[in-house]
Length: 146
Figure: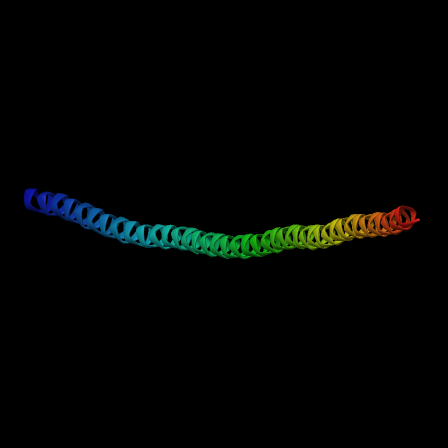
């Protein structure tokens, strides 16, 4: 009877141990499944985060390129405005220079005309004086002869 009781106890212990081993194996399997599922979730979240990060980087690069293109356009526009302003200033300077040259030529002509006029008047005055002196000499000679 003792043997029978020991066999029953061992059987119960064996069944309990076997039950424990199955439960442990099932828990181990469930842990592995949960670990895989968690890893998939984490990988999905990390993957989505990476995709979001990559999209943000791409959007930032496109924005930077658009800004660089805009800045280049603005630089070109500013350069055109500056060139236009410089060109207008050069045109005004050239017009002023041409006007000054024309005025200088006109003033020289006026001065030459004035000089010529004075010279002609002086020559005419001298010629008139010479003529008057000649006439006086002739009159004096006539007077002296008479």
